[in-house]
Length: 276
Image (cartoon, rainbow, N blue to C red; front, side):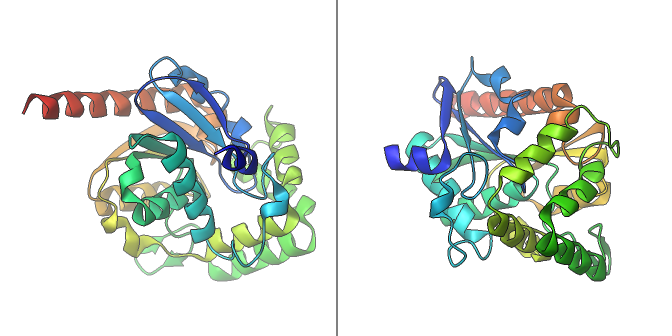
């Protein structure tokens, strides 16, 4: 377990018989949850991790063969959930890590109790009848820029991520987190993120799911949230007033409230089941 903790820079606070496992999005690290995660330390064990190649994870463990898709990261999330979740683990995943959490559940369903997905998307491509947000030519161009100059790509993406405001107070911090990422890990996860289509897997997830959807998000448009709510088997959709793709940074109070209400509903369900 010590090796797993060092590999993913696992940090544990709080306590309780339920674990909240916070997993960051593309290019970020666990510090992005600092406005939300501490609010739950009195009611749950709070576990924060960095995906391999990001943040203060052990970058030497990143290899292209293991992480050429999302399954390698899903395996890691499942391992952390098994080690620290006690069978009552709720994954709180931002953006692509919401889908990584879904894949982890399909790999190890016994390790997870539920999912909270913040600004998720199962497919970023515009398809007939499905407005994912991006045309394939735009994504190809975006990935080409990332491959050539990750700093330029990051600077171009930041306005979309943070309320379309280049002078947002979190801009410098988010830029620094992208710059800390292993360059090849960032590029490979970006390719897997933007070119995957996980829509067929949504009905396979049997656990309760909270989807926190911003009402103005260019990366994961509003209709993507509606699609997920209609496709997941047990989904609660919470739409919050927020511009951008990082509501846990730009509207942390609304995210915290949505997650707290979701946890309350799970507690009520647990109490009802115990009475049967």
